[in-house]
Image (cartoon, rainbow, N blue to C red; front, side, top):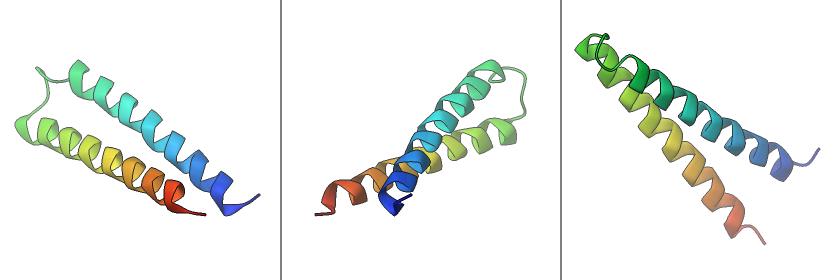
Amino acid sequence: MTSVRLTRWLIQANWLWTFISLGLWLAHLHTATGLGVVFLLLLVIVVVGLAYLEGQQLSREP
């Protein structure tokens, strides 16, 4: 497998984990502690950032 193909899999996994994390965040928004809500929100922000930046790197390759 090429590194581009593996990177695409990683990007897709990051987007999948983003949607799972958003679902968890929404499901536990009212029952989780404030720290838990903030943690899940930060997790979503980081994973979205990773997926976006990895996608940008693939689009820049020749």
